[in-house]
Image 1: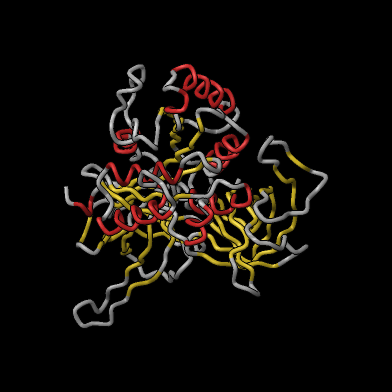
Image 2 (image 1 turned 90 degrees about the vertical axis):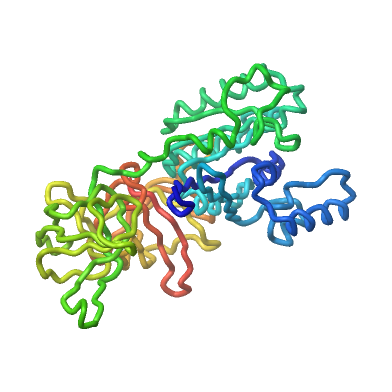
Length: 418
């Protein structure tokens, strides 16, 4: 299996301030031998400068100067590493409440969320908020790392208490696969190497869990969805009549010979061939990027979607979704925005704000509908042209949208279609 074809696991980290997220990622990189010598030397120097007698592994991830100086994580930092079994992309997201939007950004494409809990403090409001966001974003797998076990004398009771508290809260949420690992990021217990201090724990280490968790079925392989990104027409003699539609499969499995339908026109055709950079393939599925050739000449352009005639997304101009607001200024009444969905773009207007969510209690707030930065609310919008959507729960690709302010070109919100 070549390095390029290895399975990629994207995971996001969430935890309260000082739960040791950065130290944990540093430990993961350090113990899995994913750190270069020059990085190592720079971190050792910084640690000495701070007057520490040990190497502060947290410094590997806090890349921004402000973060290093304040000792906190501010923005989403992406880290890449690989082991012989899998490749990994880590989105290290901040724990502070004022960075909810950063967590939404970092977690939207993740297969797995690592939620850190301080063994001494147990499940706190922040933990519940992160679990709620993970369920809102439909992250398929959650691993709760109970950190700082060394400060609780590696006690099994402390670990069990966190497990039962988290489980009793998470039953209210839409979370299907949750696992618990007792660790000490500082000393490396159960991160990459098994801990001798916790013989009572029989599960795998954190890295073992990350390497072996089954992510093949995280994508929707039932509903065929292919948003067209661009039309490929090489103007060369050799490929004179070639006309392919390139994009990334958002769901389902496509094979040559399949009957398909193009939205919004409703024209039907059959797949003649599926090409990739390496040549023809006999089957393509999410999230592969491919080029589809059809038997008939149909006018297709960017933003159109190729689907199955008997399994279509909802074609609508009225969308309802859970929205996380990103901007300092709240949404303008009857404000107009550009809405982006798969490879499609339209203009839209917010027609109604149904309620805001109190992330900490999960209660609906219906009497105060002023939306501020990091607020999560249920809204309705009307678009200038039909979009082809599925509910976010069914398909994270065709169920997610972003809103862009037309005047400033800033992304002001992300939404999950209900």
